[in-house]
Image 1: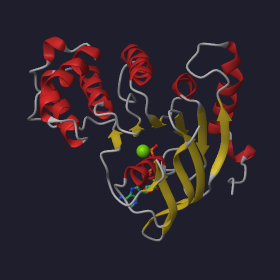
Image 2 (image 1 turned 30 degrees about the vertical axis):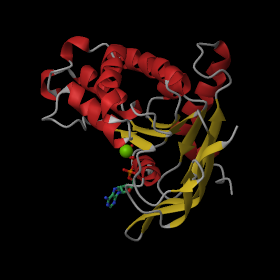
Image 3 (image 1 turned 90 degrees about the vertical axis):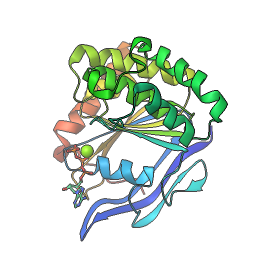
Image 4 (image 1 turned 135 degrees about the horizontal axis):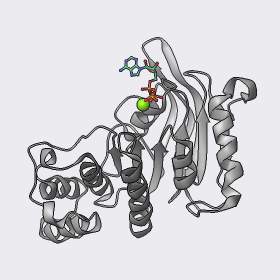
Length: 251
Ligand SMILES: Nc1ncnc2c1ncn2[C@@H]1O[C@H](COP(=O)(O)OP(=O)(O)OP(=O)(O)O)[C@@H](O)[C@H]1O
Ligand SMILES: [Mg+2]
């Protein structure tokens, strides 16, 4: 399978401080890479760099063979905080994303309605974000992120603020939606159960500037299988006990 997101020796700094130091990772098309690690280790910084929302100080990041130099309709970002346009209805938030990704005007209405049905919000199509619950707003964000078939979707703790039950249903919705609309995903979470449920691979980052602690492959991605338990335990151990098992960053 072709590599869709290719991070080669990427270094990201905030001022003088190196947050991501010569990171190299390849994410094949259609895979979900989960990134986890301690607070402040650089997960959001890395996602923003892939999105083209901040510069890459050294090295390169390419998506679909094209070097990232700025934002593009090819890449969508889904945040934890509600980043919907507050003055636009559900329908107009989703239609805007379709427009930005080049869906012709004549097709937008029908496609928007399909997305609204997929996320189960037919009755709320003409509501404003403030008239929805947090879970409903995240469903709109998910639809908005995936609408218009972006090549890559960058998700920064998208379900982190939701209650456990809503979170579980959002995870299932994401799996179903990606099945119908494949994209390459980089998903940031602090929750190791979420990581093993969603990911093909889990990267556990070390503290800012210290590289990768562990890369764990999930044996049976998105299947509830006992074989995944060892991967979960390995990622959890790396997350809590990283200083004992710190590994060198792959070159
Ligand atoms: N705009 C900024 N200016 C200066 N420093 C920043 C900026 N954004 C982030 N940092 C610093 O870079 C480091 C990495 O931040 P980042 O937000 O990427 O971490 P994170 O892994 O996403 O953390 P969390 O899990 O808490 O969301 C932190 O030390 C943070 O203080
Ligand atoms: Mg963050």
